[in-house]
Length: 330
Ligand code: TRP
Image (cartoon, rainbow, N blue to C red):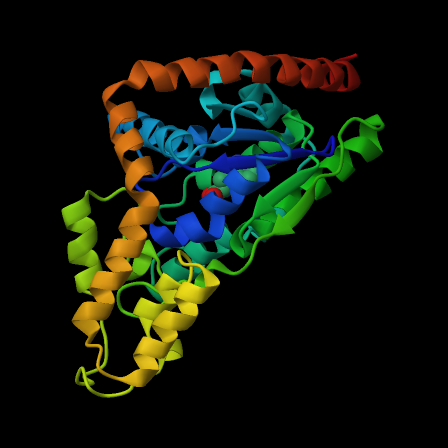
């Protein structure tokens, strides 16, 4: 264990899928076994798209329950709800003043929204709210408030961590050394995890397998994986099969070798291969799913963890805010 602080925000936008699990959640759980971890459910980040408080609340519980059910090590991890720590709103406001507007213009998420509007022939800023536009400032506040050293993110979020460094740099140049420089750490490309149609597993392709889907739904999804039309007798190439690609993430080396061999040998139909995959994935997730369902029926247990985390997080946040206010306001 090093003394470095790893910080992660989980945006509560609904049930994560197995691509999220393999690419992000599982590595987080692993890392938290040996690293001091600050993990919050980034509910404020969901507000620029979700306008229904019940949904925000439910999704927040869902995200927390999933991490608990997957066995996040709470001895090393402070887990809390982003909105419970009021210092985040304060730092967000103060950082606005040292954030160049041009930086926000360059944000990938904002540029993507503009490009879409241009393609649709409407005003460039149609449907863009200031929550989306200033999203990188809030994310910088998250990172800087808790003095994070390491921020593991997917490639799509790397720019945000670089913005946090830029903003910290501007602030430190004006007011003196106040913020630590966070380092982005980019995880392995989760784009390698195929969805039901063989393309990258992604909500935008509607090809996902939800992580905590009830057993019968999980089975139905897996049975819907698209395959080619080879007969059971024919030899198949495992490396071209979504079934095999998914299996690899849940099996041991000898099991993987054996399954690959069954593909090549011929004599195994895709229906059988899917059943083998289902048994493997179901076996890997079953206990966590039961615990997840139990927690969602006992939300006071989730609240207890989140409230305890928020109390601790506030103490760290308050120390930072005192330094920041003194630097800016004297
Ligand atoms: N923006 C991240 C996402 O969409 C979530 C997030 C919010 C985050 N604040 C963070 C991630 C701070 C890392 C650090 O997934």
